[in-house]
Image (tube, rainbow, N blue to C red):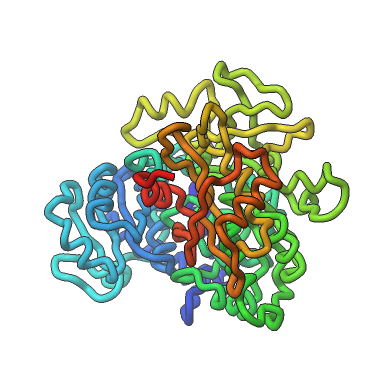
Length: 514
């Protein structure tokens, strides 16, 4: 089976069922598959061959879904581009993957026009929406194409996607994921989440992020309706959950916090909501307590990274204890245990398992792991060793196999000979009654090398001082771990997924001495 078979199969089994919903537009699985096939034949007529790269620059909407599956059906490689990037950043990605065709939304036409002379590999530009000079019209291509299934000899081993990492440690790297990698991830999560055809998903993660793709694929694996939104809005999210009778939604912890602040949240009918999935970080205990009371559904955490396709571990609903014995409640601080069909180990610098409670690097093994980095053999060899993916995440593992992420290797703060994990300090900050959001970073210090800085956003109507917050941390942490300074912001910088961007905070404060 290849990825295109998911839509073909759903069109046969559930022809009249909504395949994708966006604002006032609804496409059945049959309509969706017909349009995908038409676009696939159009790509073939444009000269696209197996293994060619086709880049996509757009926000989440049905034609993005069509583009991905059309690319996969002809054996080409989809390259989703971050639509928040500027021209210089996009130029690097498009040239790095040597895209032959670029499919773009009309909102990004001027942006691409400005860099077209520098895009060496692109032979055709396909514009979604209003046409632009010297660009093919997306809808014209759809109208001219055949709705028959493309007949190509493709296998699961064929490369399906190049998904670029965020580039927090340098220029973005293209993670190569095959049809097999994507399908393995979908199967693993379908089993763990117990998805059924009657379920539905509100997919808020952008498709340029592997999380957005994997959410779509797992739900299409069983024939679920996928509902899309152009951008996250707390109130619109609640309205959509209610209107579309959504059963499943993925929210990062900062988004859960934002939704909980919507006035009158208790008035929304969320009776169909069965599960909130989350990732990128653990949900602070106090936030989770409130969320369980408000949403009255199961919570499930998934941990992973793009290189793992992306899912590696899962904290199941039965492990979400906010009350009870400490040994059970403490599991909430973990990222759970390995998913079905996936193996996890925590190892030292020599590759040997660490003892329970000791810190080591998380490594994982499974069919969802990437095939490597695009045109980066040395980085590939460093990340993939002996069949294992070396993640760069530091963690502890307990006697029950639960993984406790300490931090990324690069995020550890080294202060006066001591190593400080920002996550540990952040967990304390989130228990302060006035704090809505918190991030901890290391900043330069002339004596200690680095010192701890907390950056916080306060809840509406609440007040707190720098001295008060530092004292609060001192009372709950070893003194060397407490922040030496606190900065207040109205809102912390976040990615489109809602993940707090510590990289941006480091850049802001890197030159400031505390």
